Image 1 (cartoon, rainbow, N blue to C red):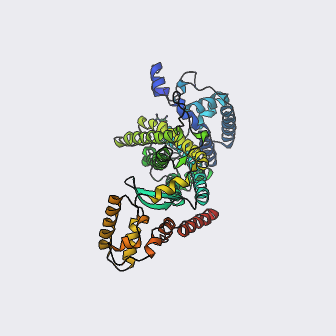
Image 2 (cartoon, rainbow, N blue to C red; image 1 turned 60 degrees about the vertical axis):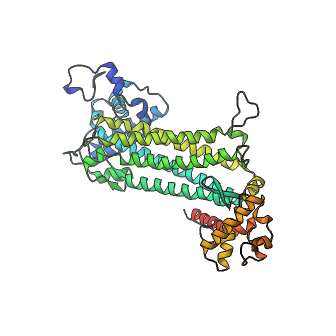
Image 3 (cartoon, helix red, strand yellow; image 1 turned 90 degrees about the vertical axis):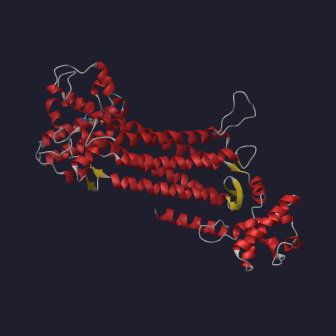
Length: 462
Ligand code: ARG
């Protein structure tokens, strides 16, 4: 290849316009795939030699040169330039400049169309493992916190109105469950795309006697793409990954939203550590929950990435189109954002102080035991609808007389139903209200402790 000439330049008379080179280049972002590109190429030449398509000597020479290119790239010794177009061509140019003509044999029976999806799959396989490790780290922090806060009672909300008291541990483990589904989605996504694309070539396969099962073995793919057209056209896995990431971001964002509210003077439920908050340049008293706010904000970025990939794919004719080069920036952005947010949130959450006194006080207010009064009547034989009506009247009476449920005497209760007896006073105590919900999935201390031990057993087995 002469300098400045493209590997695909045979049929061209004029050089590419400079601004077209710049416009079409992806090297400035796909260079981060270099190690995967080289890994794939080494597997490919090994297979080519095994099949007698190139000689063992050629394969050895190419492999050695690829390894030295890898080393140089790792040490930042190679300057990329837009004339290289993308990482695949940059590496091929390096190879040919190092070993001459025989370097040109690497691309036998392969196209950049199958090569690029190979690189992205190898990249994403590694990154999903990183995301899974980050999720697991967060989940184990949540379990630790749930154990630490096992006696803290907080108000549970629906419609942002005080509803029923719950354990803070129960709240924390609600997020454990969400992140567990997220991990499952990531594992599922990984399993589905863990399929070898090489061999699809441009779109129709190759007439050369390749052995795809060998390549799959070298690269540790349990499956081989079964349709060469699908293989080069498919980016489902990119969309799936970004969707799964969007849900992680949504969960983090909801968690952050609560922490932000709870850090306000109005709530006073939580205090995020100084290390994860920032001050105001004008108001000296301020301590702002910027990390939590930014995580909430970054959820929007990842949703943007999701819409970019979905929109990119919807109108594409079969099979590969250059539009698909636009898949990588949203993918990289989603990977980087979700990892950064998981990591910083996992550091921030165990250093957050929860104000159990404020939470308890809030939990006791707002007639949060009203349902328990109604269920008390149910236990005494009344139909739920009637008891609901009775308790509604009791609440109205309290509101009118500025009283709470525990300020009413047994006699007061009996004015609304003769079924009430002294035990109603015990029934509405916060601990009783919480601990009576002891079925699977309930907020009782016994149920939460049981879930914690199940989770710990599950973790031990993983
Ligand atoms: N840089 C391209 C991409 O990211 C690689 C494949 C290009 N293939 C082609 N025939 N132009 O999609």
